[in-house]
Image (cartoon, rainbow, N blue to C red; front, side, top):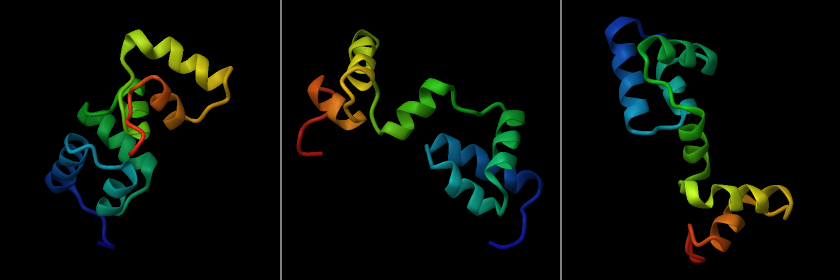
Length: 96
């Protein structure tokens, strides 16, 4: 889709993309616009992700509040990667 979409079609693609947790790059590619333009449009529509939701989406898993402190302690002081910390805390199984 080389040409830019306008109006209702653009709104529908943005709302559906955010509702289906699609990556922002994919939504922007469908619209033929930049990421910045997509974020502005989504903000105007009121469908942006909170920073916490965005981080969970990038990681691929959610960190419960009771393990959040331990997770960040392992990440910062232990120098472990995100997936390794999740496995240690039992948030992921080893075979993923």
